[in-house]
Image 1 (cartoon, rainbow, N blue to C red):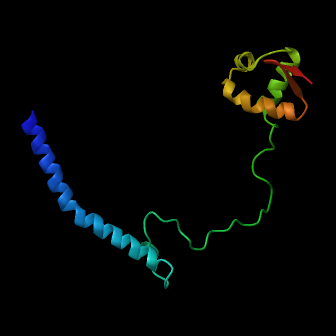
Image 2 (tube, rainbow, N blue to C red; image 1 turned 120 degrees about the horizontal axis):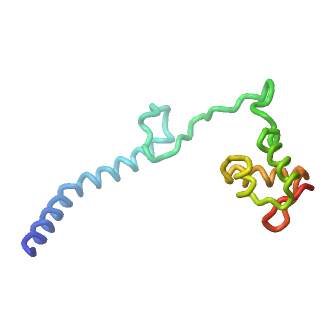
Image 3 (cartoon, one colour; image 1 turned 135 degrees about the vertical axis):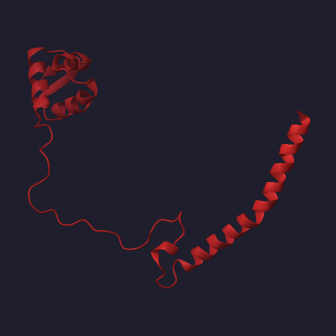
Length: 130
């Protein structure tokens, strides 16, 4: 076993000696690329791979036309959740999810929105009509 370990140590040391010049060259090239980054109008491919681009960025166009999507809280499930809470005051989110046949994680996002709109209120773990 010790012969095996000694052999592997020697192989690793040999390989490290082989790679040392390449690591040194990499460091020199990285410094040269950084020094040249601000000089002239070089090609975009000549930049260092790890550096963020400092060139012009794409700008957002002006918002024109109709807004995208539907307004928040106007979905069918939000209305359905509000109806069920009105019919069953004190219902919890897991119970509401079962009644609606959907995943509870959706309701953890919708219910605070309905609460913010003043349609429902939370009391303990249960939800009640406002």
